[in-house]
Length: 355
Image (cartoon, rainbow, N blue to C red; front, top):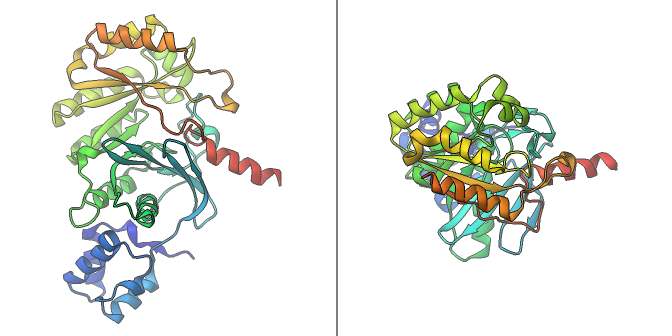
């Protein structure tokens, strides 16, 4: 039986666990600093922690559960990691370089059940949730990669937008966020963390009530129920009206801005008509959100969808701007590698099945 990742414990959980096993609170602070500040890869490197505590930790936990399976590096410095989990499953993590720092996009599930018809991540159904430790370890592996380069770079921003639906793995995602934000560890501020959801309205209420100062992004991709149901099956059970009501609650309680993600699909959702409908839908919230227009990354298995042409993208953008909607066209990263989320994993699994 595989041991649990030590990264899966929040500081409070680690403190309570050590206390239950006869160790004082300061031991948790020592272990925490070794993990997140010194970034050791074995318990034996924790030189000021007594042998009894080291032995206890080694008996119950491991530090590294992910192994690097494939690494692709783009000309712009973007790196896509394909990690293998202890059970043999594969997940993707992406590191991107920006003018403002280094961001990492993490995965929360093995596969995805949301079933968006244009998405590479959903080509393989969800087989399980990731533990909080497996999510944290994605960040740690990227940071260890940066440490080896000896350029002083640190992960400064995190987006929870990789494979899977984060709000479908809610408790583990929350523990992951608490570890990220802990001031004694990685100390990544909430304003530099964004969690994306396809629109699980009941979880948006719950997320709001946690009062975590973390950014929220909504994968909308269509301005009306007919079109959204056509490309995102989640809309059958959670129509746009129900989603918008949950966003009203979030805005009222948090006073934080929301990001609306909108992938542009050629001749599907990229007409001026859809732009006007989107402006109508968001009009009462337009001063408290912005729209992120995303050029589509074509996927072989979804050949019915193509990238919108430049003129359509600019027309859509101009229509929203004229209606007073804050929006931008997302800057692309890693266009010379398997840029679509889930694409690298899907191709590697196909290679393995072909052997």
